[in-house]
Length: 81
Image (cartoon, rainbow, N blue to C red; front, side):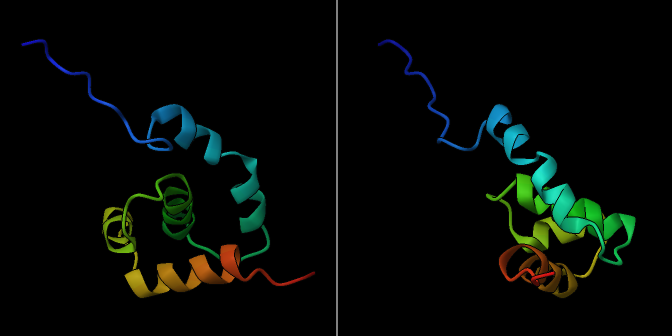
């Protein structure tokens, strides 16, 4: 029997994650009063959509509820300036 190749789901490879982690999310974070850990966690959320808020919050040492609120406020319902 020949071994079968492992297929990586679209959007889960390193090149795609790098492309998603471009300047767009960095620009969205400007003007917000964030700690370094919160900023890193938000960028991690943006680049790794397959991970949960709890995983990312634990990794960066931030509160999961705070991270989730920031995510929705900044990326899903941005204020119009």
